[in-house]
Amino acid sequence: MTDDGNGQLPWCIPGWTTATACCCMGIPAHLMRRLQSVLNAAARLIFILKRSDHITDALVSLLWLRVPERIQYKIAVLSYKSFTIPRRDTWDHSLVLLTYLIDEHSALPAPIACMKVPYFKLSTIGGRAFPVAASQIWNSLLDTVVSTSTLRSFRHQLKTFFISTILYLLAL
Image (cartoon, rainbow, N blue to C red):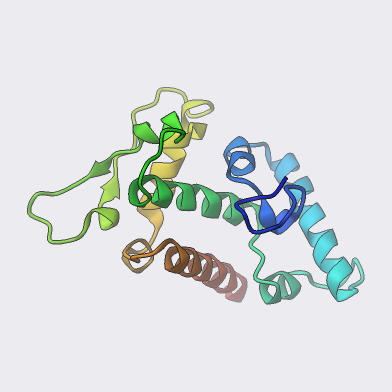
């Protein structure tokens, strides 16, 4: 069993599947910390670091995102795929719920347009739904990230965006 055809097993932290990311939306903070501790332990094992050593530099040098950013990354990639890759008979029906707000007067291509955030009543349940989370994540991205023409360049720009955000927050 492989993930996305890249040869990584599903239990490998960098090769999380999209289903894993969707299931992790809105999980409690203590479970998010436990997932992050597993990621940190893997980085410490690779760099032979002590538990008291700072781990952020190791994560950045491995180009690994923290768990919340990794979840957002996977959801954003799935959103990008839903509008740019031709659909087959076996595509996910939840992707139908993603819609763009396209301005008729805008000269921007469709992938740059904002996504419509569906209405939801309960923030505890409705805010975790895939269409809501995907729309909110997509609308928070920079235009330079979402305006890329290929999936590979989108992934590269998105990961660069998240890593630069992490480094900016560390500098504060």
